[in-house]
Image (cartoon, rainbow, N blue to C red; front, side, top):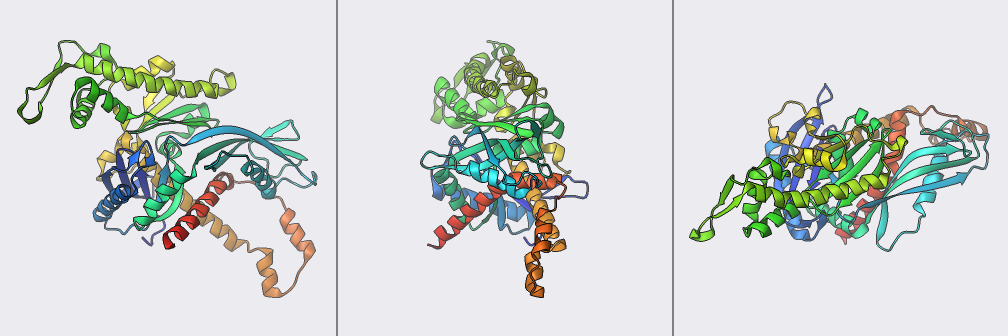
Length: 458
């Protein structure tokens, strides 16, 4: 794919692996060029447990997307999630040598470098550092410190931590499938890109992405992510409960959940009976819809209560942390009947189902409008966003060549001019802030890719 405006999102989930090829149309909507789906056989709760099966599933999904689009996939944007992901808040500061100089990129780089020196448990790795609010000289609070003056610069950071071995296994599967990893994105951030509006992120909102193996939680306030968590339960455990409670096979349990399942038992009558075909000529089994709903209700309530614990950990009762936009449910598990009502009942927050179709152009893939594909669509959007940021960066570098390159051409060294260029304040732009917030994660991705390339060659 030579057209750099085309992005491929690869969602490696517990129940399915999806590859989606997309690009932006002139109206800013995502036009889907092709998609492929394969059953995920080697992933459990977001963690690769069988590399060989995962590679085959990735190849199958990519091949289908290539066949339906007529394009050859080489680079992909992948999502990372799983029960090993966790987050924490951290506060750090630096003391500047010359407070009469404006705060610039180097000061923020120094501050982030301090955060990277945190003591970590063996096997853990900081994979995402997101600056939140900055404070200058202990009293001036701002979200954009560049161009200001001060001696002490401190900030709150949202830090996402993961198990390095688990993430490397995902990277190995992608490389072994003959693909290049362009970027890695946390899956709840990708889902948020697809289903949340800027107004919701500003007002305060909880994204709950219910997948097959895990439930991802991301809380936004004032346009910034404030809290993330992964709950090690998803739609598969509901299916498992139905299987055990009704003494049926997994395939039948999944069909029961999809066709007749409800999270609210009171909506069903005891007289509504479901007949389940017996195996190999055995007599069929019968179960009431209310009994089925009670089984589902018990497990779903447990998941939503765990989500509510994470919301409480964020401290939503404080006035400045109020979540005006409530909860947005997405993911395949969010399609369960009456789940929205149960979530509102347990948490007391307004709830809606998040669909990615708001960002999609009219296309021949109506199934992608389902919440089950929110992460895949979000990964495509993240890939396109990444390409735009990189293109703007290249354009700025081309328009403003560095002093070093000029010296090499002229053979002259003018120290005063060099100092003037480096110290000149530049007005911050929105895309610059976005680039800075992603730079640490992008740098980590580059390190991961170097490791994977060397690992494959070896």
